[in-house]
Length: 92
Image (cartoon, rainbow, N blue to C red):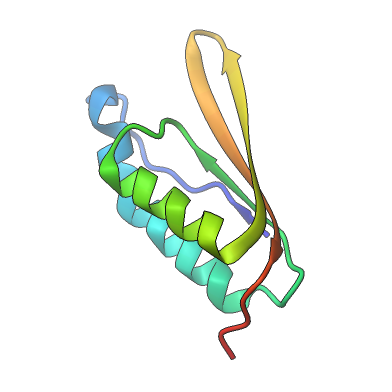
């Protein structure tokens, strides 16, 4: 499963992480609801500085066997991709 949603934050790029946090949380909840055991998730984020992102990262680390961060620094901006593998917990 791939979670790659966002909204236009061109007018206030410094607040992108805060503005997108509810969407990232919804993507993670949807993934946890839809993935079967041993499923994989790719979640694209821009930074991991705000408490909402750190808490989401912690939740995913507690739920999946392996979480890898891949950082892509192109054209002057950084994209952090969380590669999340092998869901541990089945909620159903």
